Length: 78
Image (cartoon, rainbow, N blue to C red):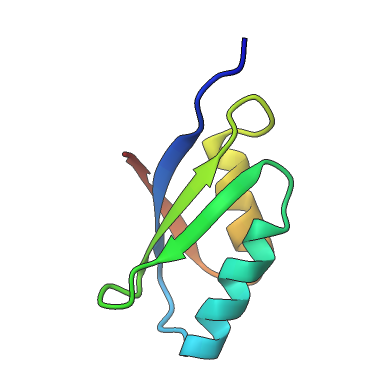
């Protein structure tokens, strides 16, 4: 039985330019287990990440973000 995807909120510490945010979104979507990424244009420090808990967990998602050179914290699930 397939489990439903999980959506979490990640706080980005840096103030990134729009091109850097776009690149981060695209890059994360290429990582294993991540289904969708959305950074709110009016709250650019908040990123929603939709992932498959069958493949990865929330701490691995946070590690993906940090491995891209971004300082971030996991805020929680939706």
